[in-house]
Image (cartoon, rainbow, N blue to C red; front, top):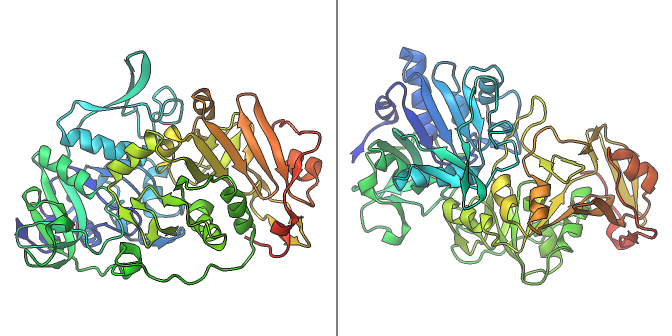
Length: 511
């Protein structure tokens, strides 16, 4: 193992290399080495023709704000990256990586996060590739889009095979030449410690795949420690897998030493807000779907940000929340972290658990949803956030709860006097005849006996093989005007739909 500066490490990456990177958002990502790669390419045009494999989008942004010139955006240069395989892209359409994709300057593929992690482990294990049922019937299916995100991606990365009478996707293996990972610390032997990071996000998976392919593992760390300073149990990547260590020159995006995110003791949390917004209303309705002692997966958006706070307000300490980034237990919040987590698992274990149907309930957001119950969260015209882990999570969930407002784009609503009022209708309908891209295939899930519930601020819907049924409606809502007129397909309306409790709509508004 050698300790090098970022520029010297970047110089080790050859033209045409396949680079796999760890990290999610602005955590566990090698920002200093990304900068050095970009500087090297600007100076001498190398490394050129790179294939980049990223489990998730990497950029120093929060809530889709910021991120330009950081993370993967640094190296989203024409000629540098010629093929991109990622679980998600930037939520902001004008970011560098989205320009690269939209202008066909690199062949871009969007694959489920869990599939990418599992593929890396298959490479690490010396397999011929990955076989998985995840993605059948979605945009990842080669009979549909094959995960292709632009025209430059001329062929899918997978093919359909038969396994004991079931259709599966098979992704043939390819070698990983460079693994670019980020850890909290390294000792003099190259052992990598994750003692100050909120999650791993593919750290060991990238390292193992690269090692198996006899590639170069470059690890960026925040600090060096002496062997024995930290328990061996804190080592996530053994030093024998690491070729180069770089001490970060770029400061962490935020304080990663917050004990609250690491489970170092139980930290008192500030009381949850009593604010009543439309998002809070939807989270309260979602909470009603959770049985006692439920093991619950939460996706990004309202589920991860608002549902835990609703649970805290209502004393639901019985619930066990989990998020795809790895934290188990505690109270999730923005960024894929959890306050006072009870465990932090690797993503391979998490996605295996999800795909097998481990959680009792999953609460996810939807972008648009169609007459079959299928969901799109991955592409909306120029916006291409990508699918993330949605296909992996949705595949195994026995009960999927989908959350979102009925319409979007300029929507204004308020709650007062126990009623909901639509002040200004949204210009974008989210319940459409057919989604632009199938991220989750509802008919397949329903055929397996899974349950789908859709929760909006105006009503709660059950989705079955025979379509939608309105199960409950908000007080103050005119079903014909405020629901049926805003949905592009027919739904069943009972003679006397249940009216949601007026107490939920006593005050508040906005979103």
